[in-house]
Image 1 (spheres, each protein chain N blue to C red):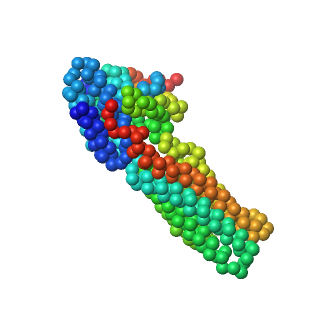
Image 2 (tube, helix red, strand yellow):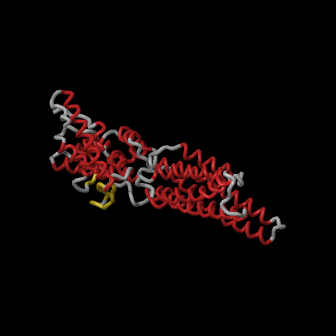
Image 3 (cartoon, rainbow over the protein chains, first blue to last red):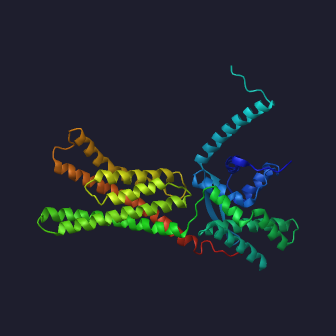
Length: 112
Length: 276
């Protein structure tokens, strides 16, 4: 499958990955690559600004530890991040349904 | 070893591209690159080639730095550290100025014919004005550190400092102070950098300083009076402004210390730019 950029959904995907448990940056990138079946394979360094931005917004928090003589930062999702993720999932589901409807793959849910 | 130099020099170049003391970002980058190299070596790649591949996969320093800027991520810089120092000074000057003004009032009541009260009053007002002006610098640094921009807050705080010179227009400058402080607090309360309690102190302290003067102004406009005696109203205004400013200054001091200290800590041995 052709490699693509995650566009504006990278924040939500990072939150979704951290929702399953704390990870450090390298593991987040590896998990993103694995879950997307290598479709999302962007420069690894560009994911860290997303992590820092999410931390500034209070959606994730981080702690430092010493690993093999150097410092490692591990991220975990916060309650605010969990709520933001739920909202983004709802938003994405609605968007996906609308696009699929326009593309003719699925009918728009009938209003009853 | 050449490989350690390669990763360390990459991290240094990234810090340079970020234009600040990005020691924490550099440390995280080193950790990532080392793990990336180890994974490639385990896969059978030659170590020197693994290091080059890891750096290529991470991205060019300029590209990575640009993505930090695009994401609006702030980093500690010389300016933010100086702004932190300005915030510390601001807190000290405002608190000290209020104490001097209090002594001036006491001296005026006990010796109204003496020139000392007027001198103390002038010194106190000058200290408070200087402190509020410096807080505008501190606010700019705090917002810059969090990757936020709000020139309006900085302007309002500057206006507050200047109009404080016309000390009898209390309601004017405390209003500008309150608005500027609330903008900074509102922009900062969601951020991870600023401790929430300090942010709340800044916001509510400024609000407390503004509420009573406004109540007095509104009551006079309406032809009424909060208290029957003008003297008591004046005392009430002074006490509320002083109390509000002290609370505000305590928050400014905490944030100023955090900004100032971060620059020194980040560049210290906590994140040595060496590869082990």
